Length: 210
Image (cartoon, rainbow, N blue to C red; front, side, top):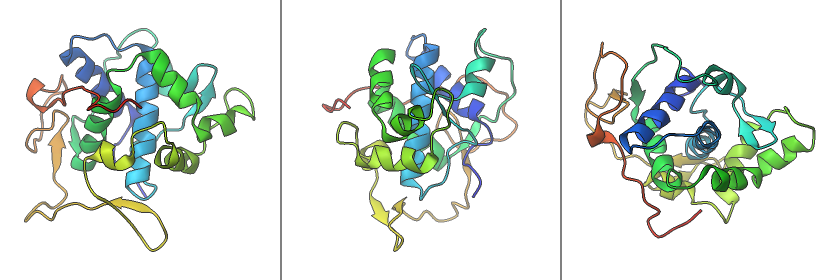
């Protein structure tokens, strides 16, 4: 099935803009860990569907999406990315930022290196690909991490095949409309830019530290 976002840069830019709105410089390694958890949690919540068409590899510091990491190595590239992200993607991104955004790069790297997917890939050597299924199962099973339900802020049900899916309330005329990366109303033809402050989730641990 297709990924929710067209490229991994849409996800990377969303996190970069969320950090800017919090007057924070988002370190490259912290960005990589946030992207890793976003991919894993989205898959856990949506029956194995990917948030972005990306593959993570085992770097010495933790899971890494090598294409985004290289592209951002000299700063934010001037790319025209889609700022209208699907609602389900925004829900996961906001949940990840809310639950993990306040942690340091070192803390997130430690959590990511403890994941099942990373440990299995690391056994095959640096640069080995992380299995996406293991990423999804890892965040659903790890006691040290928030549950997928808490990330989504929604009820999670399971199919007959045992795959988790988010139980969404039916909205008349929803029709798969997309919302801006800021979480505002559906838009079209809007130039790329920072998401508005009003749509950015507040960061706090909610009394729960992953």
